[in-house]
Length: 196
Image 1 (spheres, helix red, strand yellow):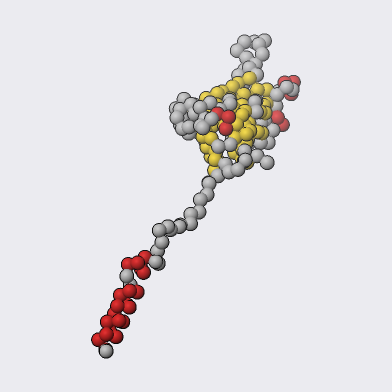
Image 2 (image 1 turned 120 degrees about the horizontal axis):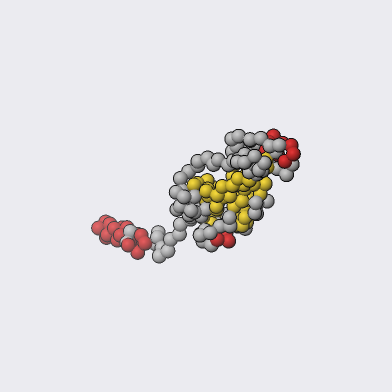
């Protein structure tokens, strides 16, 4: 009798741990939770047009006359730098780029500084996502002026001649009778921000 009870118990325990019973803990499907996010980001960098190197200063001059009786030079310009950009947005966000001069040139020097970005060329995935230029923007008063609007998801590239071509125009103000003086060293700060 004892042997048959032991056999029944052993058979019962074997039935509990058969592969079909163990498999019942797992199923033919399984799930895993993922957290997926899009990193909205905006980055800009000023580079030299010719070789893509960083920074560098630009010299603009309103030269004096070269002959007695001739008018002094009243405009100086430069188009040797570019602004590279990467912009990734979420939803319907668009961005602008502003430019700001570190001094108020109107009041102190009776001169003006204009900055103009060329519309994007060779931006990825398409040029229109790099926004559009607002034309020549006067930043002489030391207040930030908008130079590009409507930027969405794009990148300019990192090769030579990539990014928005920047043109600076330095000129006397309209009131030449008061004379004009050299502003000296100024800094232009570019900022990319979400449009409001």
